[in-house]
Length: 550
Image (cartoon, rainbow, N blue to C red; front, side, top):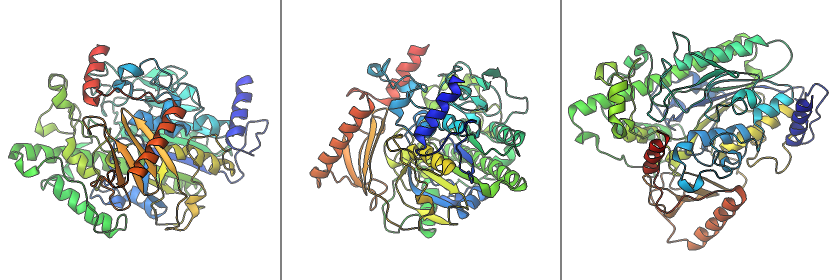
């Protein structure tokens, strides 16, 4: 009883004037169901609705029936993003100040760097459940593996999850020497994946099962579906990979150029802006390397398409149950495309544990990653990748479908952050805006129904992880990247004119640089950021921490 009372008080504080009844219910009479779909490491331009050639008809239909956000930002890494998504708070506040794999020596043991949700803020699931929602989760969690920090201890009524940051998609097998083993949980109980396991299919079907189990009882649901896809290893049923045979033979520059043209054609970006340059020249690869690289990108594309297939099955199921138009559906990625080439860092591990042959790329038993060339194409038109504070590390697709509030086919360039999603969902659920100061993020519920092109509110926003940092103010961004993504120097960009961050304006506008640096210093102080040392380098720290773990 004391726990239930605590949850009601927390929900009341977060939801402003919402009234919590004896049963803990505070959802509005017209409270929607909520389905939050998160994909892992998917690039900005992979979806057809964001310029890509991959067949994503079902997700593109969500975009056509809702709003696409072109200026949506995440953290540069998956676990910090997920902590912000689940709580609406800055990652340093809730325990994910850095990835545990990348912790600098001076961050170890410091508050906000626990590597799991530290209990300083309730999750959106906790708050919605206190309002009377059913709460379900299926997929990758990566925010803790104890009973208190698993979803079952963080407000989710039903859950089946992979606790780690990634894994093989066909079997219970680690994909990296950083994990000796993987841990799957249903609720608080360890479980094994089924024999016919394919991660995307498994999580989607589990979510539908949870939804059906309580359908018709008068309570809305919140479903958090967090696919392992398309985190490496890139794996999919062979028929999905074969659909992209030879599609990528022209190389990453050619694909990136086509995507950029299509982004202009569909109105995501204006013509005449510079795009990022590929990190390497496709034509300088050997014939065998080009052949292998093309097949690896095909495996990635097949994996993306399988996600789309699963999304389509979920949408069709909701429609058949007369739930679709009463459900807010959000689809987003957790950060930029992954450029890491783990096979080069740990060649013996991958040769020993996986079939690396060309013929088996993407199939069960194989390991595949696509490297910086294709990651760059995935992040068209931006520069850099996952792990960086550049737009290529932190800008992601976000689609919202909710016909009761969102006009069809809208494109919005309003600045949004992943910390804005939790307060938005709570406002949609309760019909009341969250209390002032309850979240680091702000609700975008009112913006969902505004006309396209309406000016957004001015907002200064800062974030940091693993030594990479950024401050946004209107069209401007001050950014710093730690090695290997940069040299830790601050640079100023006008993202409206230069979204690819090709021209540093810091020498032309020192006053703006000083103002944004001051804003960043305030952010550091207010959120307990422990800055990485001057010699910090992400790749070197990863190797050091993995050796320490052994």
